[in-house]
Image (tube, rainbow over all chains, first blue to last red; front, side):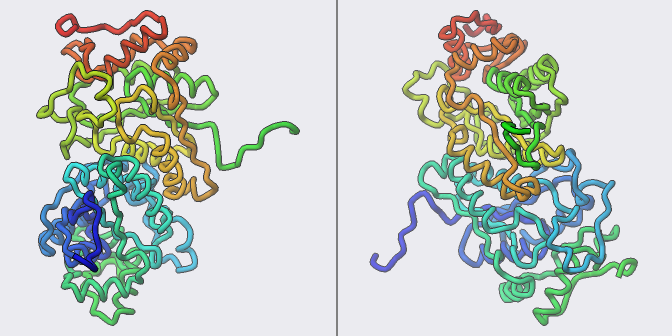
Length: 241
Length: 241
């Protein structure tokens, strides 16, 4: 038994993996599966303006072999305040990169905090001590709840909030993408067999799910494929691009 | 302008006050109103086994003069795991005080974390930098997410998660009851004019809302009125007590 890293008894190899239907979270699920975790995928129906993301979540969870997949209904949009959930606020297009440091109108108030909190409650009912989330502090859109210091603080809070945590700081929040560029994420996922044609990133797709190619999310994704030197399988809307 | 304590610009006197319909949160609302905050009451419909709590929230918000009152629908019970939301788990009765240090089956996984996170998102859409919650570390039922260290950690996380927080650690989580006994809470609320007949604490009421008098919550409440020397206005079920 020498030279074997001992894991606290209260930790385990069961994980809740947050899925958004996008490129990042699909890659996170592939990484978690590859690391040997038993992965329970969790998606949120939070009053998004379109349903293509949820369809993508189900396809991805199935294709990558998640142990289960659930959709949590949460009408976070009932308070308004974001272009991602309110039809009164337009999704910005063709922003130049210098303005991406600002917090954009597509920001949903406290979204990652709410999603992680619910994922934690779900993890506790499963006895899972691992959460995986695809936040990224490099090629991100300026949301405050994507930063490493937020994740660290949430982890501490999570361990104080729950039975599992009380039993010995067992809860870990894994952010395997946090310091990767979009191109690196795409390369990693491609190595692990992710079919990115299944994923959906666009904030403002057409009725068939075709990507607009011009919102922040499309711009980051498109440039990522170019930088990675990997063919972009995204189906762009002919009306937009 | 001398001798006036300067408040950071990003702080304000607008608050979101979490209401549960019980004695504690009604007292918190009375305290926040008395301190001059403009209070927006927020209750959760989270798949409780009974609706008397939500009826009580509406009565309390109205009686104490809250600026608004909203109910957020959140089916946290869909994951199971607690006697408060699952009809498969019985509410414990007549527990002796020595066992109240254990985490009971009425614990809802990560409930306060989830509620505070959603309240924070709501606060951000209102531009409110204050949250009020009636957690209590003295006469509590052994839930980990009622402890001061949890609240402190959540506050730090909240400031890292949001636009308001990014602008200067503006978000404050107020826990005016945290070191008060149940008797002190009842005395304080009585001084501030709270009508406790409007509040509902019981985990297992009869069909008319009559309190069982025997669950942890009833036991704490009943003893509180006795210790405070204030007449208990609770309507107890004749079938139970």
